[in-house]
Amino acid sequence: MNRTSIGALVALAGLLGCGGALADGSLAKVKQAGKLVIATMPNYPPITYKDTATNKLTGFDIDLGEAIAAEMGVKAEWQEIQFAQMLPSLQTERVDTAMAGMSDTLARREMVDFVDYMRSGTQFYTVTKQAETIKQAADLCGKKVGASRSTNNPQRIAEWSKANCEAKGKPAIEVVGTEGSVDARNQLKIQRIDASVQGNETLPYFQTLEPNTYVLLGEPLTEEITGLPVLKTKVELRDGIKAAMDKLVKNGTYAKLLDKYGLARNGLAEIQINAAK
Image (cartoon, rainbow, N blue to C red; front, side, top):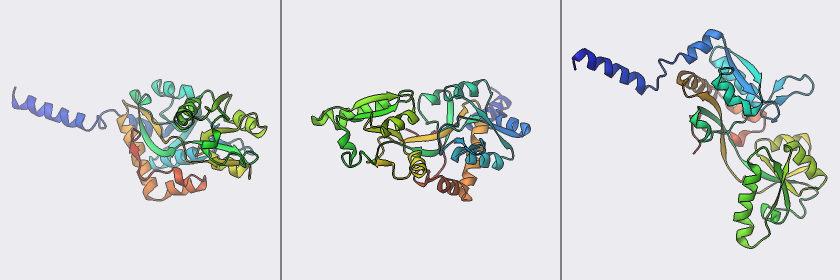
């Protein structure tokens, strides 16, 4: 092999060692378009929802997405898409990324990389009427606990019950599937169920919305990391989003937005790629 060929291979190896970030053109494409197209589903307050007075998108993800786009020198364009269609919409390039409380999971990482920006956890809670008899998570053994059947929360409750109730000779939790978190809260208020679970990033919002109604029980059952998904082929765009987030952390915008929505305990110390284990 001649010296020229060796030099060419070394140069190619250097590009590959940079993850292809100099060659995929994905960030340049977004900047040329002048917009970062972001999928969302506004049914998850205070993360993403619609203001009842104006019908405009609002929430932590919306404010953060606007700030990320601004740091990248473009506008944020929001696409309302059903959660199940978000990853397919990335594949078809209908959108560039998504901000809708999407957990960074190994299964999803087969298709995308995540720029992780928030911590979440599944939390038991009840209502004040029940709090006199249900004072801690252990009191839920033998009780009815509801959770949206479209999530993996029913499975999480069952797993917690096996470890914390059945393994200790106590009756199992009766898991009740609901049509969603709104249905679960309604059933809880009329005492068809004794407790429910929900992401701990959302519960402070409902405690503010309905004061003296909900009581948290114990610590979160799980800890998950939420991120912006970007196709693995778009390394340059992924790194551009992370760089924008790093700036927002450094200049204090990230912390201010967390405080604005009562999410200080859900923030991350630093922005990472594919941080979830």
